[in-house]
Length: 292
Image (tube, rainbow, N blue to C red; front, side):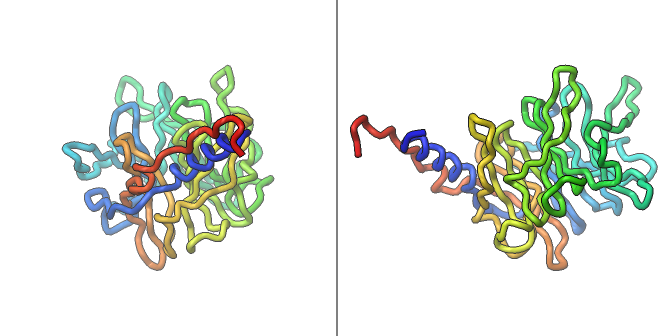
C-alpha cells in the first residue's frame, strides 16, 4: 500500500470515529434503564430495550417529523415473565433476542430466535450453533451485518482472552452459522460488549479493557481487504468517565444513538451526530508519480 493508500485508510478510520454528543434522546427514555437501540430495516422503526415496566422488554419507536414517538412494547413477545433484550431483526427469520436459559448452576443470558406465524403468536427456538460447547456461558448482544452474512456477539465462553469477548460467525451456504471465531485483535483482558456492525467490514463496540476515559467506552474497528481488523480506535468525543455502550448508526445520514450510565445512574439513550470536522473534511489526494 502506497502513501496515498495509507493516508486514505487513516482518513476513513478517523471519519468513522468522529461523532459528537448532540443531547439526550428524551422521548425514548424513562426513569428506568433504556438501552440496546437497533434500527429495524425491515419495518422501518427503532427497537430498544427497557426496564420501565420492571422486567426488561422490547419496545418499538417510530420516527416522524424529525421526532421520536413514545416507545411501545412489542406486543405478545414477552412470555412467562422472561427478561428480553437486544432484539435484532433477521430477514425471513424474525428476530434474534437475548433471554435467560437455565444452566446446571445458574441461568445464562443466551441468543434465541423468535418469529410470528400466521396466527399472530410468537414462537421460539434455540440457536445451538451459537452455543455449542458454551452452554454454561454468557452469550448475548447479537449484531447482524446489513447483508445478513456476518454475526458478531459477546460471550465469556472458554477460549477467550478476557472476561467477555467479541466473537464472529459467518453464514454458510446451508443458511446455518459457522463456528464462532474470537476477534482477538479487538479483545482485551477486560470486557468487550454490545457490538454493532455498520457493515460486514465496519464494527463499533464497547470495552472497559482498552484504557479509555473510564468505565465502558466506545470503539471502532475496520476490516481491510485481507480480512484483518484494525486495532480499536476510541470515539473520543463520546467517551466519558461514565459507561458508554450500545452504539447504533441510524439511516438518517448523520445520526447515531448510544447508551450512557454508571455511577448510580440509570442507562439513558443519547443522540450523537457527525462532528463538523468529519462532515467538512476532505480525503487525501493521490501523490503524483515521482513525488518525494
